[in-house]
Amino acid sequence: MRRVMSVACLACVVIAAACSESTAPNSPLEGSWITPRENLQPRGSMTLSLGFSGSEFRFRVNTYGVYGGDSPGMLSSYTDISGTYQIDGDKLVLTANRVATWDSFYGRQSPERVEQVNLIVFEQARFRIVGGMLILDYITYPADAPVPTTRAFTRLGLD
Image (cartoon, rainbow, N blue to C red; front, side):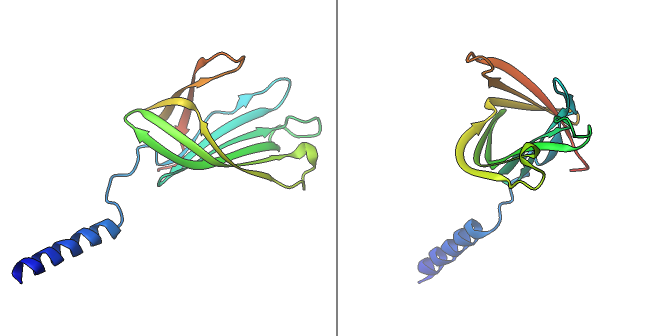
């Protein structure tokens, strides 16, 4: 009887541990990151932001002032990508499941376009954090040939 009780108690402890919230440390990526504003040609600018919370990420590209009637700080368009992420050492895999886009070219009141997707963002990404900077090294294909690319994001706030 004592052995049955011990096994039952052990099973309860294992089940309770499995059901409780994870006590693993937070990801070093947790929080919000942004790039400096970049000038676009022939006009306008762009910022990229990247946020991590739990196992989810959000990557957003905003353009400003790209159309003739837009002031330099006026939002012209955005692409908002979200999904889940995994870290394995310095490897970072961002798997998008949703892409939302909006462009003021179709009118300021035009609706956001949303697609369900299954794609990798920042192909073959590796990351490092140096000071308050998140540095991503990944592959792009600007002319159908792989090009190593690096992008630096600055941590926002006191995350």
